[in-house]
Image (cartoon, rainbow, N blue to C red):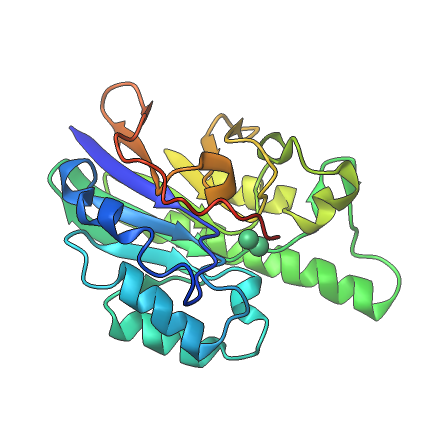
Length: 258
Ligand SMILES: [Fe+2]
Ligand SMILES: [Fe+2]
C-alpha cells in the first residue's frame, strides 16, 4: 500500500502570484492523496495575502494541510491568517497533528513551524542572557511539541511537516553563517523520536532538496525556489519509499525570498 504526498513550501503568495499554481493544483488527484504546505504561504502575513492563499489552495479535490512560516508571522496577524485558511478548508497545524484516511492507509501528519538554533557543534545554547535563553527555549519547546504530536498519532504512516529545517543537509547552498536561523537539530531529534517515514520543510530557498536525519528519516526541502515546480510528490508505504518526478510543470514563480 502506498500513500502519495504532494508538498511545496514558500509559495509567498500575494495578488501578483494568485493563479500561477492553480492549473497544476487541479491535477493533484491524479498523482497525490494530500497536499502539504511547508509555510511561508504569504509575503508578509497579512489577512489580505491569506485570502490569496485561500483562493489558490482552497477547494481542492485533495486535503490540504499546512504549517505557517516566519513570513506568515511578520504582521502579527496570525489568528486572522489561520481563520482565513481554515475557512477555506485548509488544516493549519502548530504543535499538533491530523490523521487522514487515504486509499493506501491512515496518514498521520504532525506539524510545527519550528525555529532556528543551529545544528550539532554549531548551535545556540541555553546559557547567558535572558534573551538567548528565550531563543533556545523557543527552539526546544517547538521541537518538543513536534515530537509529542508525532508520537501521539495512531496511523499507518507518519509524516513530519515543518517550516524550519531539521537537518543541515538540506541547507547546502545557503551561507553557513545563517544556518542557525534556518533550522535546528532539535527538530531532527523530535522526528527521530517517532517512526517517521518522511519529513518535509521549507524556508531555505537556496538550499538542497534531499537530506536525512541522524536516525535515517528521509528529509526533503520543498521550498518552491528549490523544487522549481508547483509541488513535488513523495510515496510512502510498504514498499521502498520513493520520490516521484512530478509530471506537473512549474508554476512559473521562481522568485527567491527568505
Ligand atoms: Fe520563504
Ligand atoms: Fe521562511
